[in-house]
Each structure stands twice: as C-alpha cells, then as structure tokens.
Image (cartoon, rainbow, N blue to C red; front, side, top):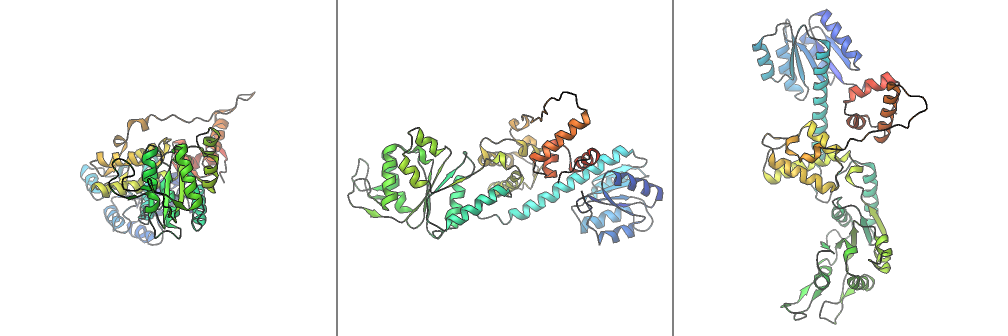
Length: 456
C-alpha cells in the first residue's frame, strides 16, 4: 500500500508527549499522520491536504478543539472528527457531539480503545465516500435502457451489443431469470438505426397457441368468435422498430413454423386473412434455457434456432458480478425513494454486507425486490438489516479448505494461504477481499505486511 492509498489522519494536540505517542501508534497501524501542535497549524494543514480523519485535543490555547470541529464541519463535512481531552466532563462531551463530533475519548485512554475508535471512524468515512461516488454516478443513469455496471465482463458484453446494434442481424439473449434480458434488448434497440421506431415486447410462454398467433400476427374481423374488429398484431405494431420475444423456446412447435416463415419472408398474414402484409421489424429473442439443448430435446425447431441465433449474448448472473451490487442497490434505493415519495438516502454497512454476500437466485429482480421492501419499511431514512428479509442473514459461509499436507502446517501459513486464495477470488481487489474476509482494509493491509504477501 503506497502513501496515496493509506488513510491520512490529522492529529492536533498541544501536549508534545501525547502528540508524539499517538502519532507513533497510528503510524504503526499503517496510517499517514500529520501532527500539529496547535489548532492554527492544524487548520492550515487542511488547506493543502485531504484528510480522512481528524483527532483534536479539546482544550488548547488559541484555536481550541471546538473551533477546529466547527471549521471541519464547514470545509469537509464528511470527514469525521474525534475529540480528545483530559477534561472529561459531561457538558463538553454533549457539546462536542451536538457540534458533530464522531466520538469523544478522555485522557488517559487505552491504546486499544483509540485504535478501535479510529478504525471505526475511518470505515465510516470510507463508506460515506464510496456512497457519494455511487450517488454521483447514479445521477447519470436516468435512462431506463442503461444497464448499470462497473463489471469488466459486463462492459465487454455491452460493447459487443453496441457493435451489433448497428446491424439488423437477429440476436439471442441468454441468461437466468431476472438478469435483465429485456433491458439488454432495449439497449440494442436504443443503439440501433431503429431507435426512433417502437420497441415491443412479448412473452412467448404467456398465451396458448391460438391467442399467441392472434397477438403476434393480428386477426381480421370475424376470424373467430369474439373477433369483432380487425386487429393488428405485435409484428405490425413494431413496424420500423424492434420486437422482443422473451422465452422464445416456450412457443408451441406450430407457432415456431409460422414465426420462421415471417422471419424468412418478411411478411405475415393475419388470422383469417389471405392477404400478406409486408413488415420491417428486427427480432431480438431471449431465453433462460439453453436453446441448443432445447433443439436436441425436440422442443425447438433447429431451422428457427439457426435463423434466430446469428449472435448470442449471455448475461452473467448477479452473483458473478458482486462489485455491481452496491451500485445497483443505491440506484434502486433512489428509484424507489422517488416512486414512494420516501426520503431514504443510505444503506447501513451491515445491510450492504448482507446484500453483497447473498447469492441472488432471482438476480437483479430479486435485489430490486429487497430494496423496494426496505424503502417501504424503513422510517429512519436508512435501510438497515431489519428491513431486509431474514433469509439474507442466514447465508452459507464459503470456507476455503486447503488440501491436507503430509506435515501439518502452522496457523500462520494456513492464514496466509487462505488470504492468497481470497485475493485471487477478488482478482487482487483488496477492498473486495477484505469484505469477503469480514475485516476492514486496514486490517487486511496489516496482515499482508505481517505475512509478507504481495497482492499485486
């Protein structure tokens, strides 16, 4: 960890010995410390350095700790301030907390206590900073056809989708239920030359054969009982645009024959008509099943499969792109807060931990349900663990089990091997590795240094 990635702490105390001792303790913890002997020099340091935490003595000549606190709240409101004093009185503690201090500790204090308070304050600051960054990014995600991701694999998929969007080739989108297949289809439509035309979606498993034919191709007046007027189908409704056929493998085989003819001939006949209607529509199909396997099982015609499957795009499940979960969670939090007219701005650290660790068999749709539920239940403006389903708290713990060696290894070597394994799972991302290990980034950095591990 270089100096730019280490937390920067401003320490202000007019007692030279206390200043030196605490500086030494914090530097041994891996922090970068700027030590100042009075409030004036401390505030001057804040003009040139962005600090992650301020620790200041309360009683000092000139600019005292309360004035430092007030200035920090004005210039850097997200930076936590810890007050230190040898004059532990209830009144001063209350005043400091009312003014916005993160914590209040009295001299003489135990070093273990100081370390813990500092660690908690820095973790809070990190979460707030990441939340702020997420919110800024979310402000640019108002377009409903935007797939929200920072995952490299997803970004490559979107780039491929953007490239093929400019053509008129047929596309099959494969992915588990809830991964956003229709959203990706809309993304292709919006990036195509047909973006000014309509986007029409149809679930192929929603209706039986006769109704599906009428829905897709339309019908003439009197074509069947109840057909009181001529009705155009979804193909005609999508003229000049895109027709999205979800769960295409669920179409009955006879309907598959009719669909294939429409795709090949670029014309259709409404139910009850003998007059062909020319169409100009791009078809994007989707399925949560393996279409090739459906062909082999006789549930899908191979000629339709080859007609549709010019390009296949596979959406990964949410559990394979966990770094997207906080970004999606805050996007959904903002979305449902607006929809419900609720002022819910934050997700607690523990709630976010549970959200990130859950495996999401229902994918993004399930995450959306969790956030919608949380926004509806919370009364405090913060979505917390109590607002999430209890199932999230009963997660299966993923344990790395090294192979048994002929000679038993030491606990330290097993710990080192486990950390290396988790870093590999996290692709070297220390923040994600620390989250998986259940510790903060500073603790992980200390372990890496102690065990001589280089995560790069």
